[in-house]
Image (tube, rainbow, N blue to C red; front, side):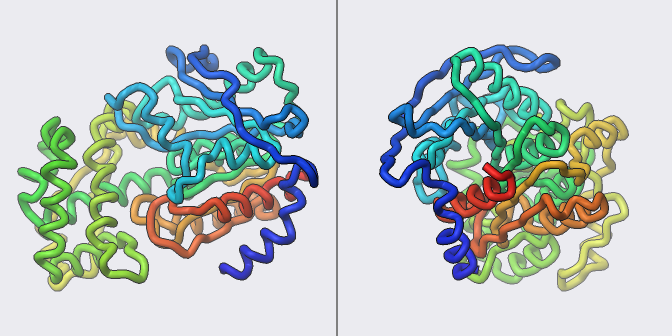
Length: 386
């Protein structure tokens, strides 16, 4: 894979170069709040960066949809997601290639896929208001933003194409169930570590669990996982949480998967009008005593209203413009199997010619490098003919 990426980068580099002698830098040209699209509530923060000097700008603008931000986070928390894990500044990377960059903070935190779709598209109006001469608009996004990007490309032909990074694009309900399973199985193998347990009679996450997550519960999870390797082995086997090739990744992987249960459950229930998680009838396999596990583990039934709402968060696989996806193969938060499911969905719609998937052989959620991102962007621009 590293050789393939190197060859692709060598072949596609000219597509990303605005001029042989150009030395483009990045500048924040506008920020503030804007009115979001019809149907969305309130306003959202935004930023716009353009290449400098002006001659570097090639007329293409890449809109960016950020990932999950917990409800109650300080204003501007989403801005921290404008960096790759290796420290690369995303607006600077895009501007140095000659493209404009704009991103929205959305009109809602938490589960905000629908708002993200509307609010990101509304950035086009912001660009027009700034008299920026836009020739083509692309959409990119990571994690929750990856789903925003994929659904946007499917539904809106005005986008010339999109790049979805580590998004739950194959099945939203299965993503919900994966994260719910991570919690109920953890409570089974490590009872009491996260409190009294997450049960059908106690679905809501206590405020104390969120408030003391970093100081109290993360160390407790790490200690429990490291102190009981047999329970950890069974937990990883039954939950299918990816840890890559290094067993020492186990604690970090488990913490990251449980984080979503702790910080996303209450808002998901409110946004979807009920409990979306369902493991009634699920048969778990991989423990030393599966019969005992399946008889004892906490069981939940999804509310009908939530099941209906989740249909709005599903992709349909119908592409009329190119979509490139980038996903780490050992992602403990949004599993790589989301890519496999999406490819099957796209194939059923006869849209495979517009889908290009790039696996990144790495551990971690959205753990992609600047090189990974540049290659994916180059492939997208090649497919879009820009």
